[in-house]
Amino acid sequence: MITPFLTSRSSLAVVVVAAALLAAGCGGSSDDSSSGDSGGGSEASPASAWADGLCTAITAWTSSISTIGDAVKAGDLSKDTLTNAVDTVTTSTAMFTSDLKGLGRPDTEAGQQAADSLDQLVTDLEDGVAEITSAFDGASGITAIIAATPVLLATLATMSTQITSAISGFEAMDVKGELESAFTAAPACTAIAGS
Image (cartoon, rainbow, N blue to C red; front, side, top):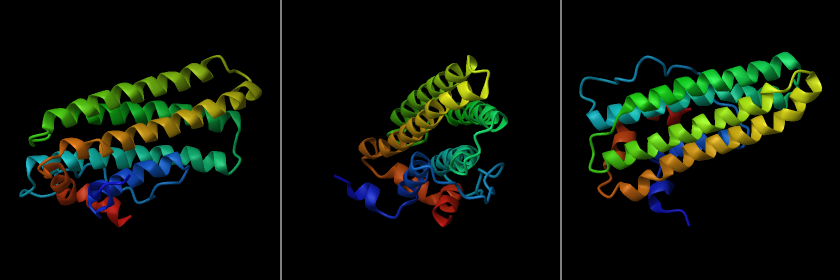
């Protein structure tokens, strides 16, 4: 049963949908206006700055990873393409988890719970990368590399679901609606909504 928190047209709900698009193999927006500007404005609250950083990180990761799904859907299963795909996952996820670790805790009543949730997400994503690299490490020829491709796609879908679940989980801890307000006020989250 979907609750009002996630059926509202808040930026938080849109972030969940954007993350879920990866699991469906959809490409992200090519408008990459996210990096570097996570401050928003001088009047941004610490909580909205935290939400802005999270949305910026999700947008960057989703945009990078979506190129893999696009290549596979187009039937481009060459050795170079799939090797580059693994490199993209490794590099992009390392940047993503580093960004998540740097966020700290939001300045809300549920801040520590939200930070703990992201810590667990970091662990899950790092495990996903390890699973992908393990599948491709022993694959040298194109046949072996193509055979490992389902692991890549399935793990990316799982990682996307883990992101979605982590954000959706904020609902239960956000008794005062502070996190939802923070996401609504965050410029990067508004940009996701606009795309």
